[in-house]
Length: 110
Length: 117
Image (tube, rainbow over all chains, first blue to last red; front, side):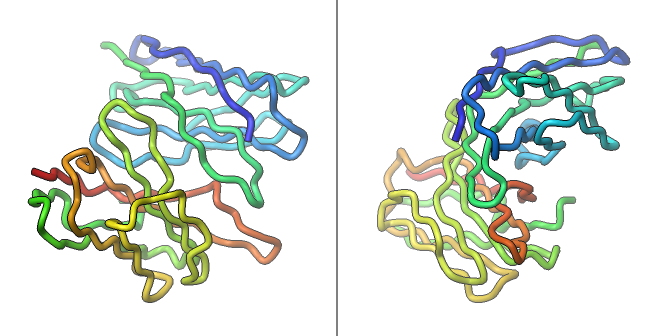
């Protein structure tokens, strides 16, 4: 499974968009990009995933570059409850495993 | 609420004790997982069960023994643990599709915080 690189930490003002980048330059054609988050003292929570098209759901948007070597998770209107560690994971959907890295700690500030 | 519950939420045990962690999923899923999260380390996959058969065992010491009696329940039996086994133990579930495993959209429980003295 391809490895990902994320910034260690980021800050975001409440109500503003949070843009979390992820580099996955060694991604292969059958690997998906997944995003999970882990709020303090809770289990990880699935957010969104995509293969090559941009995706949007009620939680977030996922923008994947055309060459698929990087992606950005967008929380359109961050709230204090979005403070968490965000994990970008690249994996084959059918047989891959979730390999969690260190993630990005997002701090949403009032 | 994710539909995955874990009990107990906190557990303190001595190195000679035997205890069990329990996980139950109410999502109708057919695959379940145990993860370990040590302080300041990424989550580590320990075991995977699909259709009640163990399909993954990531070199976990034998003092950890999983059991999956049915698709809704998963146990982790613990015996003669070491202090370095203190961690957050997370259970997750997902749905295996007819065309293969779908490991990747997993629903996690809140975890059991284990302390080994």
